[in-house]
Amino acid sequence: MTAVASGVFSKGHGTGNDFVLIADPDGAQPLTAERVRALADRRFGIGGDGVIRAVRAGATGDAALDAAPPGTWAMDYWNADGTVSEMCGNGVRVFVRFLLESQLAELADGEGIDIVTRAGIKRVERRGPLFAADLGAFQLGGDRLVAADGLDVDRPGLDVSTGNPHVVVALASDAELEALELHAAPALDPAPASGANVEFVVPGTIADGVGSIRMRVHERGSGETLSCGTGAVAAAMATRHWSGDAADRWIVDVPGGRLEVEVDERGHAWLTGPAELVFRGEGLTPVL
Image (cartoon, rainbow, N blue to C red; front, side, top):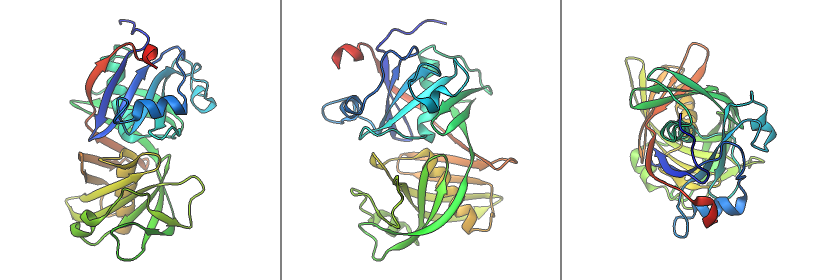
């Protein structure tokens, strides 16, 4: 396996949810809020919904990430506004693709790798051209009211935790979904102490044990994004709950593409979808 030079970075995305990815195996280039905002800026930086640093557990400087066995790859994920985040379902798949393309890891088709996140260790498997992430057990919570530009009245939303917090709102039609203006964060009542991602969904059909939904999302710290992996899981699991657990496999269509969510026999939610790298560069550290 070839060593990767310091300062190597890539731009990648999972169904349009995009990230700047930095290789820092030994933890020599810690991220800061200022640096993240500069990298994620779409006009003056590289641009992205977030920034991800690839670093070995034990060298991250973050107690939650360094709690993993030494040598485990850690996904140090930050939102575009410079705040840290617990997890990112699209990000963790793109992260593994970055490790493989940077020759920091090897993974044959059907094999998996453990990645430590601030929401615990997540298993990611290579499945042909796609990647599947075991996001673990999800938790359904209580209800809260959601107000958003484009909605005629406040709507009830269901709390769902997938390692990070979500509020899922069901809409009646595609027209309602398309009328949303998500340039500003939806207002939540009561407001969660640490904020939440908000998913708006239009349930579709359920046939042969497979359900379908359409979704748009406003991510805390990033704004509206073309996709949100943990949000797709939250949206699917909320719809599954509303349907009386009528299906364990869900197809989730987002503005950036299509994701699949499946619940296994342990009650763990698996997120499957593409992970693409669109360019690669070197010399990031001297520039900043």
